[in-house]
Each structure stands twice: as structure tokens, then as C-alpha cells.
Image (cartoon, rainbow, N blue to C red; front, top):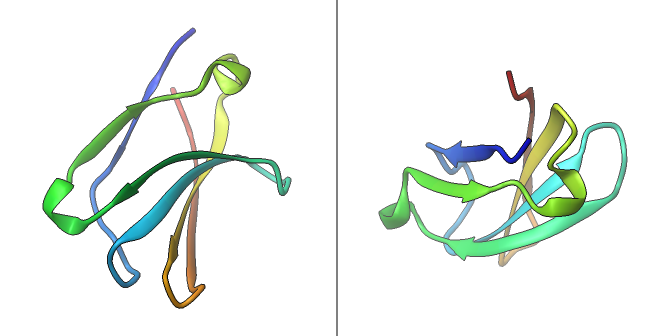
Length: 74
């Protein structure tokens, strides 16, 4: 069940590294480096994760600050 995720806001310095993580774990998949000029940014859920429904999006800026938001794909 391939799904798409859209990032609408960034709460960290730019550019930021974008990851999709398994909710409740430290397992994350690198997606891309993004800036606010690319928002909204939509990406396909990677194949190893495409059958799950609970994810976390993690943004990491150059200072090492992280913003994590977890959600369910319905």
C-alpha cells in the first residue's frame, strides 16, 4: 500500500535533512534535504515502510536541532 507524506511546515533552520522513521523506534530512512521554498514537500513512503500506518517525520538542521512529528496514515 504505497502512501505519500506531505510536509507543510518546518520548525528548524534551513536547509534541513528530512527522515521518515518508524514510530516508537530509532529506525529512520533518509528522504532528502529540503528548504521552506520547497514546501509543501510530498514524498513517497519508502518500500521497507510502505505497509505500516504509524510514522514519524524528523527534520534535522545544521545545528543538530531535531523536530519530530508522529502521525498515522489513514
